[in-house]
Length: 467
Image: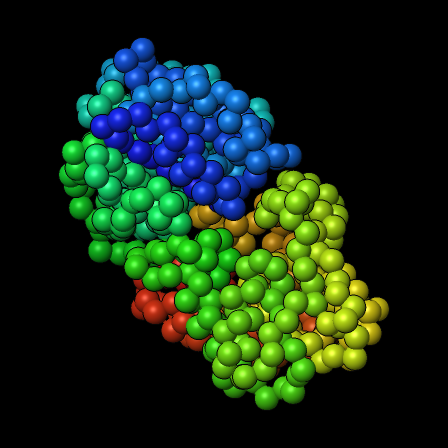
């Protein structure tokens, strides 16, 4: 996915930029970058963060950064920030999202005899393509509007100019941007968890498609928000940090609600409720509190040398690292009927191994309650899964096994309570060797978040979102 942080201050902003960007490290693992503007021009750095923390890569060179305004990014895709020279002036740019029509945008540029200097895996850097779209207009404001209209998919961005930071939320608001304020400084962030320890207070949640120009004195709205919004539901279920808020709704609170909803109509008898760490913990606490069943930790996460949440891009290595991070606690497992809450089941490969470990350590029963419905459609907007195939999704693979084709009767399989849905869930349960498996109903997830369904992106589950 990725995350953005920008700051404008009356004094040096580098410390705020460094720590504010670092507070987005849970959103990506590939690259981190920062850029500042000062009296000498623009200064930037980009580092690979696949094998180390963002902080460790930038700490040694912080003394090379000075400036009163800057932008930072944790990127799960291309190297950023880019520094671009144009008729609008020199500017820095960072983006989060996914350009589904990237190839078409590139071909249109080539037809105009444009070129791209920064390539990513042999193709143009998506952030440079966005910068190209911005530069086709006569102002930053008009260029951002033009880019958002041209992009199919999702793109939130920050621009760093000589005197301001421009913040633009994607057209349908699938990713958040929030402005924070303190005396003498303003910041803009994908995650509000970056604000408290830097003494910023939430000032404004940008709406879908809204564009703001931010200076140390304040911010002004350049483009108003659109009427339609479909913010990613997975922000609350999985991506978001527990301390963060989107649309004024706290992540941890929603996870408690999700767990309570899972517990509400669940009649299975268990001895202990647990969460798959880390994102499953909040869901499990909500479940345990509603059912008044003890909460415990049959798995503990070893973080000193396995700190990253998303891990390497190679699936085999991700599975290995996921296994190494979780250590079973026999005293909490042996002889117990265990209820696990998880944010979601994507592929199910690692979960199957975890379940077997629990039985090997003497569990009597292992039940699983994912906090969202069965994933049937790959994310079309935020690169939620690095998979290139729908068959990497446990739900779609099961449909293939049941139907002989992975795209038959998808609407029926997505409908909780249907015979096909029940058959799919039962097959997944068998594959994972669980005692029982029950997914969250979509209507209960929507209620747990507290926004109308039409304001949420639920594409992964029912393919109902706008494009």
